[in-house]
Image 1 (cartoon, rainbow, N blue to C red):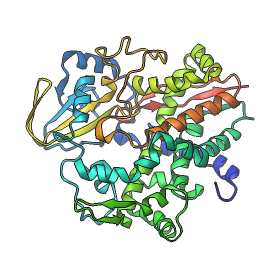
Image 2: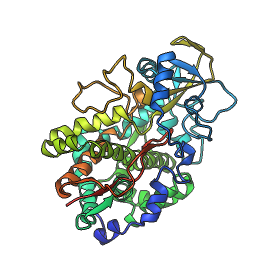
Image 3: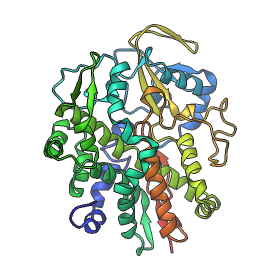
Image 4: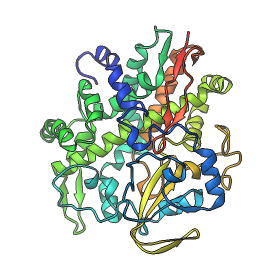
Length: 421
């Protein structure tokens, strides 16, 4: 549970700071192409129809001239290729031998916590061993743990601050706040430091300094939280020897989980909300029959995934869907295009939660499929459900700016101004 006065603290989050950190158009987010405001899907459809795999990066092929720093970028000294069909992207995600998540074997001797020492940069058996340490905390059966301990209370406190206002801007004031408060709370980080954590994710030493006293305290007295899971976890090495994680390994785990937990779900929740608000009849149907909410979330993950591209590093010369990919090159997987492949879905450009369920790549796929996807689903289900429960006649504000989908490697909605009551 929250310590201190959670109502005052949660509702009093610095809105200007939230907007700076969670608006895709802010300088904080432009390195992922947050200033890209064109709808890329028609162009991606043309590229997908022309060939499964093209020379070049997704953003250059999409006409984006800005600089982008994301997985597999920039690496200007190696050839780049981009896949656009579901079959090609799915095949690459499943082949971890040919298509690795990092260009080299992880250096275990690094003394600096960060992404290069996290699961995101691990390949093969090492990745599976480390992932197995925290996987049990993120399986579907654990969703209730997250909801009861952190998500439900956070959501209700945020809605408490909106319910008497008659209007709100949901993207920053609601969607952005839920995941960052949930993940930091699960680490034992005080509410007042939540936004500082988000702002400091590119500074591993600063995050480590925040976590150090919490890690030390949990080693002495474990609690029912995520840091306690990490300090008690035992890693079995290739020789069968069991050992606890070092502080460096815990910090690297934490930085990855904090980035993923605060940086993706808010955008996807905004996409789901916008898609429903733009379709009042569908929103009314979901309000009346909550069993439609989960399919709406899954359809949004297919229709507009918030992370529409991931990259893999080619480990050996290979022929791949008509292209020769040399060892050392980078293959970019345009999951956004793959999720609208007409070879897999009828009417793929339509948002239709009632369509037959088929696996999409909204959370990626293969061995690196999103660790926190079930927590993200729980946050969206609880968050959107609470809005429909407590904000009667929720609708887009006709006098406000209408939301738009923007961004290149991170896509999300702009402002989502609503009125209710």
